[in-house]
Length: 197
Image 1 (cartoon, rainbow, N blue to C red):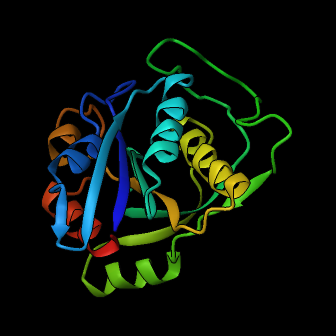
Image 2 (image 1 turned 180 degrees about the vertical axis):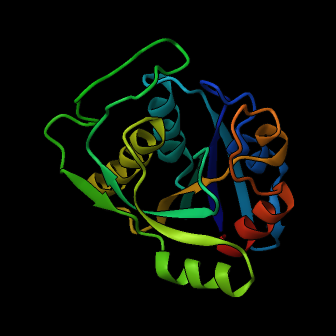
């Protein structure tokens, strides 16, 4: 079984992106049955969806789990819905700032995650890991990538689990923040990722 995992490079006021650190720290093989294809995406509204869609088209993974940073959140947030909206509160790393635009013009308003979100939540909380369900992945690149993946899966009628997970800030990044924000250790994030995969 081949699972595609994605994270993002640092962006904005976040010199460290927990999703990049997590994806890079995971082994390429979890066991003899699970092989991980790992990608770090640029925070670039043009390149990020292009790169991930090319990877899913070429690799035909058995599942996709995308990760992103949500600085200020205190737990692992399992996203329910990808929405067909780009409305950036900050520019991407190329300086692009988009307001009230569709991810896919004339595409459906939203897609539900095809991950077993409630089951994943229960597994995490039963393991003592702070976690919650979140309605949507926002309207920045996390949501854009999430929606793009789900749209590709839908139009190709692929029957594979796919979804998006938001992560808190790492302690070393929180320590650099001028205001106190919640954080979670990389070890705990790794434990959570292995449980969900």
